[in-house]
Amino acid sequence: MLKSKFLYNCALQIRKMSSNASCSRLTGRVAVITASTDGIGLAIARRLAREGAKVVVSSRRATNVEKAVNDLKQEGLNVTGVVCHVAKAEDRKKLFAESEKLGGLDILVSNAAVNPEIGGVLDASESAWDKIFDVNLKASYLLAKEALPQLRKSKFGRIVFISTISAYVPLDVLGVYSVSKTALLGLTKAAANQLAPENITVNCVAPGVIKTRFATTLTESDETRKQVLDKIPLGRLGVPENISGVVALLVSDDGSYITGETIVAAGGMTSHL
Image (cartoon, rainbow, N blue to C red; front, top):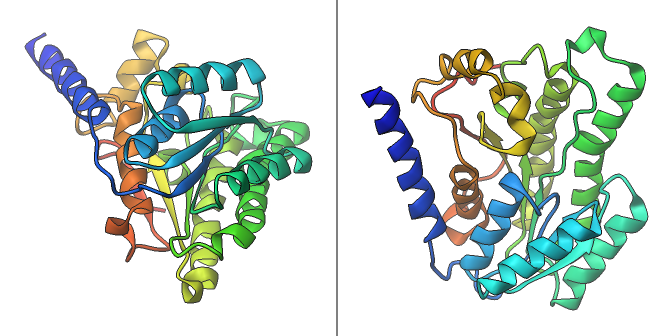
């Protein structure tokens, strides 16, 4: 009981410290973040804006974009929003048109992902496979490619893909999703090698089990939650701010000599392919 209370208080303190984080590392820079109206994406948007960036948030639903923009603006942050389904070319075009209005793009964070089916990789339907790879992998590639004209004009080009710990240790309930996220690790390496001569860095972050709506499948029942916690050496679930801080490092000058890497933020969970 005491251990659980201690770990809970630790998580609350980390969230409080992260939410109060404020510096000017990103002043004058423009960031586009996909799927950024909830969970990890919203935490990244808030953190980068608090560090001085002008941030374009996006989501598939207009109501979600409107709410996120209003909430962040009430905090005094410089944000705007665009409805964007990352698998649709016309939506991606609107996304980068918005960053162009703000002066051009310096930072791209590709966070959007879907998982329409639960189950093992060989039990998935072909339609689920296609949808997952279209959004989780192909759209990340297309976003990076379409961002390049603006990133090449920046003196500060940064691309960050958001993967997952299951890219390293696939979970049975997230079969195809896990495979798509493993492929992101390869995309990160290949793109980083290609863009390094242009001083554009490409990195990846692999979150562990984070307290978000997306992770409800892994945490909704006491039994499942216990099984998950048993695999986490730190003994607690992560919070979105644990990931936003890592992204902020990678896209700042402090991360300028890091490229082609995947940083795992998973409380010590196994992370070897």
